Length: 157
Image (cartoon, rainbow, N blue to C red):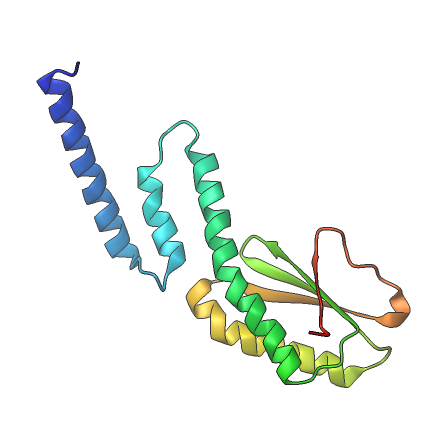
């Protein structure tokens, strides 16, 4: 059974936490459009023990959700512009998406198209999500296998 003193102090703690979060969010302009500020704002809620794991999981989940539309936009742009790729794969890597692409030997036209698409998609999404695409482009003669941690994209669909 809680005494009145401990109940009152927990209410005061909650009020202080809300005030702290609110002012932190206001200072950093936390909104749906600014997920980094929102994540920073939530740090004040974390328990001292185990808080870092919680925050890391939260960050990974937010990053995953923010990355999905970026990847979808990238793939749709490649298909819409009819870029002649042999293979395409990607993986999440913190605040960026690593893209692995294989093109025909000495196909500079396709290489340039891919770099322009990277820039185009980054220009659309980075200001909001603060996640960007980073591409590695290989030619078929390098006989590169898709790295195991990457997700391969079926370009035929």
